[in-house]
Image (tube, rainbow, N blue to C red; front, side, top):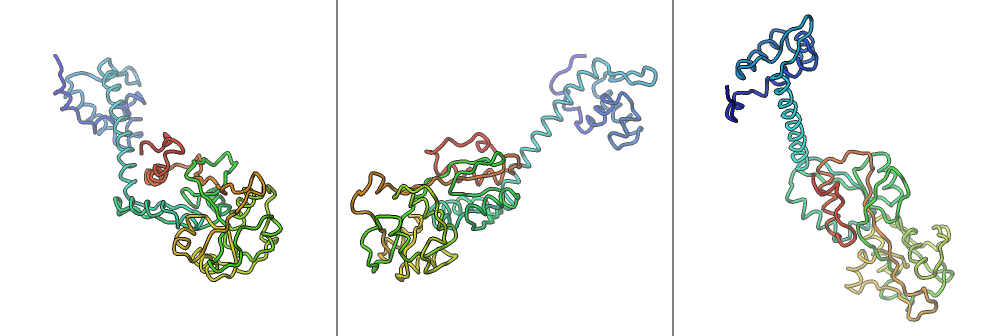
Length: 327
């Protein structure tokens, strides 16, 4: 008998599970147990395959069931079919999953004021069943949330030396010293001592940003703490910080993009150096922003999709990593 492709249409893949159970166990009774069926059901399903193929798939040899040549050929086909079906269903489920569900991440508050956040919201409109859950935290707390698996990923403004964490460069953030338009200071202080004597407004993560500014402009590498500052105000919201600065309560260091709108409207201004008192003065205070995730934690397709959206915003820093190319 000569077979062609149309003959395979008569094969019912639902029968493969029982057939492969017999191949693996070499026993109809053990196959029935493995497939959670009765022995009679196993025998009927194998008989259907033999009838449709017009070939004997098994022969009995004592207490064992031996697979024939036709049976071995069918088992290779059935195994491949089941493997491909499993892969297809996994990919299908991943893609379906990517369209709905929660993506939970943490970031410093300054990220809310960056254009990237608006771009994310625009992207998300394509997937109305995708829920974005965001927590605002300083970098240290973002890392702790990540290590505790409380979030899918996070944004941090310093590099992290942890073998369990995978980091991707996202963008560069610049920090500026700002004051009100009515501030009596005309230029930035020329020494660290002068800076520490000035009234400072604090917020979560401010000292980290201040230390970046100090290192860039004064060359100081030993970080200072809030204890060393002359603190005149503290706010846990950037809008409140901007209002305090605009009200001439004190000065602070902010990410430039956070202060941009208030600078444009003239409410606050940047305190710059007017002369190079040292070679290292007048260098922009820059810091790399990173996206971080746990290396060993499985990323659902929806999480990979959102991270990829962010990475696509700055492909000049690196090509899209392979794990985000396909979801």
